[in-house]
Image (cartoon, rainbow, N blue to C red; front, top):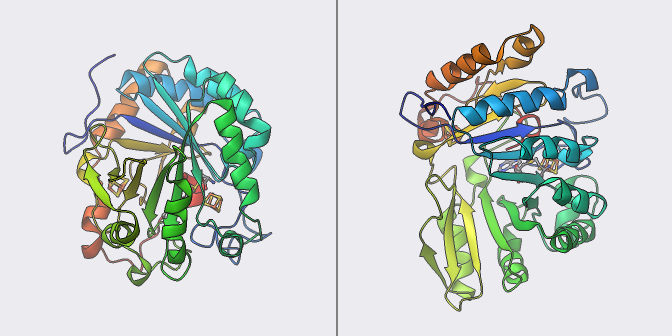
Length: 337
Ligand code: SAM
Ligand code: SF4
Ligand code: SF4
């Protein structure tokens, strides 16, 4: 590896998050409200998407700048055809030692085995409620929990590592915090709670609807006592808590009430080939154009290093001081979380 890329605050470039498609088979209210993401929504056309060879080329250059972890996301990444072929290409890149996928799990019974065979190691599965009625209301498509639970089972059978992610929003699913914790305790699956975030411009975010990390932990602790544990590695985004009875752990991702920009090592690539140095960015850098204009590898690496080198993003740390009304932000379904 060459010298690792550092941004303006000395943060290293370690994680590459790749969105492979902006479409989804669900319409979660906090991410793709169906009133906005209806039949007329202008999703990316297939020829706007980066080709797998282009993604591989970028990932190879990123690996030389210090990236060792890749996560595939969407939209719903399993709606991108032949995703296993991309995983096989990424697995072969020298320096990449961890490949993961974030998914709603619905296609995992179909895909888990071939994804694992291609080199996928871990999946993060989104499930925001264990009660059918609550889940049906959240996902905007009336889908019950069974397809997701079957997806979890398929991932387990295929030998994939699993974490389950639950976004918590007041009035939407705070009633599910304890039932979800109870369900996944003892199952060897880490459940991670995510504070509802102000990503994009369409999810009607309001601080009043955020249930804080402290509230989530207190709620569970009352019934199933917890204690804090050390992070597994530098820059881990979830704070960890283990059950005092030794039956497992939970995590909480607290981008709103306890932000972690100081250790943020992540760059994001959209499905149409734009690079974003922050989840809350307004503008991306069009790297697809450079690729299609025939840029050579050496220059490509310089462009990527310079982009990271200019980076000053600290949105979550500065959230309180930012004027939100007229700030345009990218959508979660476009950039993938
Ligand atoms: N469709 C896949 C899924 O749901 O896992 C991958 C894409 S989804 C955009 C990635 C993650 O972002 C999911 O865990 C989802 O729950 C989370 N997410 C979406 N909107 C969010 C919001 N407003 N606040 C916090 N997390 C959000
Ligand atoms: Fe789709 Fe994932 Fe967004 Fe839900 S959170 S609408 S499953 S992209
Ligand atoms: Fe990283 Fe931006 Fe999130 Fe801060 S707000 S942790 S800089 S992605």
